[in-house]
Image 1 (cartoon, rainbow, N blue to C red):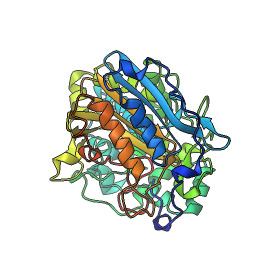
Image 2 (cartoon, rainbow, N blue to C red):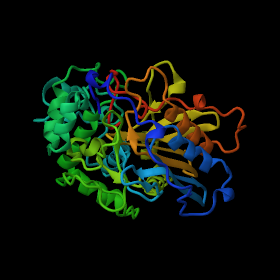
Image 3 (tube, rainbow, N blue to C red):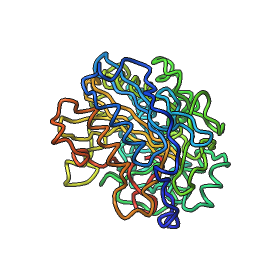
Image 4 (cartoon, helix red, strand yellow):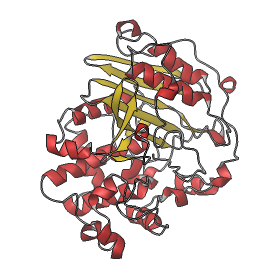
Length: 414
């Protein structure tokens, strides 16, 4: 999302002292942390909550070993402890599910990666843009099409309107296509949620089915991801879940939210365990052929000339760390942030979520929560690294999770 400049000077984050903490409890649903290679996971997760976030939940896998835990509060008032199995809005991690679905259609010969988008969506993307932008450019964010959430969520009033409004995908696409181009099609990476709204419409044009139905049929059902779904216009998160706190609103719970504004760019609800199952299947070749997976993992630089910033593929990105390259995505909506990263073989995995977003607004310096969650990520991904050398600075900033409203590159479904 992009919340506009009026939010940059908005209300400060919820301080750690403002929320009551539950009695110490691991919330673990699997083996004790001592059985996992890095016994510091529990402490690192708890440090996120101690840094000013109400709660954090995580699932970490190393081969067949599986660790899950929650820290802090799932809900501030009345207070409830965080549990690792709670459902969570995962924002732009939706894009990886949607990209895998479209790539299956490419494998079947029903659409081509280099087809012009206008061939499939002539009324939605007419003229030069439809002729010049390819399917591949939508998937890797090199289309140059503007980001519709910059206009849709540009103020507190915009957020309140979006929260209770049902949008059609065509409406969202029209907003993005009306914005100034961010560059020449194919020239450079420029993150835009409009790209993935168009991908959803493209899936519908090719199959004649709703895009969410296709994702469910091709991805969710075969992998038995029972806690993962598209909520559509239903504002409630079905099943067990916590609150969602947008820092400028203080402790107001925004977990009830009409998510049609996010559509195939960021609508999905999931759990950390389901995310790990999905990415292990994807990277393990269960969803795509080896050739198509290679296409998906062919990246463009997210920051030209800066390899350490990582690369974006077709709905998935790579990030270098001190212990190797990891693949995945992150996502943020109003009140929830999620990060999911995995080794190329899908063997080492970490997915975690926070129930506070946009806490960086108006902050002149990095927020302690960012350093805490980056430290947790490195603790999970690099358990054998020298602890004295491990630093949050070792992990590059993620494309969306740390962007603050008001910056040119901000997104709420990153």
